[in-house]
Image 1: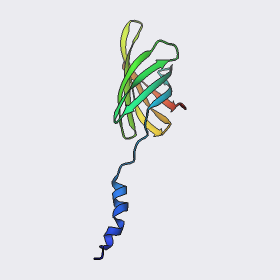
Image 2 (image 1 turned 135 degrees about the vertical axis):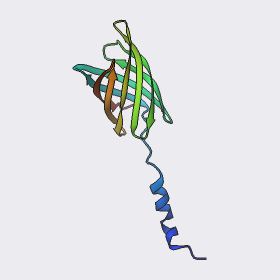
Image 3 (image 1 turned 60 degrees about the vertical axis):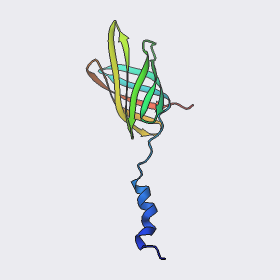
Image 4 (image 1 turned 120 degrees about the horizontal axis):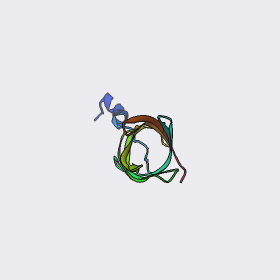
Length: 124
């Protein structure tokens, strides 16, 4: 029995419908940025399990050493952590996209103030 002509294109059609797999964000990320003139410098050790992010962020001054929660949706990334600054409980939230397997960028918000960040994945 002869296959229909369209059957020869079936593998290509099926591959085209499979979404591209996003990079695994597990690892140490050097995060830099700015929030209204205040520099941001920290290392976030992230662990990705499916769409869930966990880990810890530590800033360069030692004032922040906080557990991270977040999620990944394709190339979109969102994570946050709670910390205390001058007796105030604050949440720092990051949202952006991983441009490549080793970089991401986006916005950061803390205490109702917006800023921007970039992150580079560190070699293991």
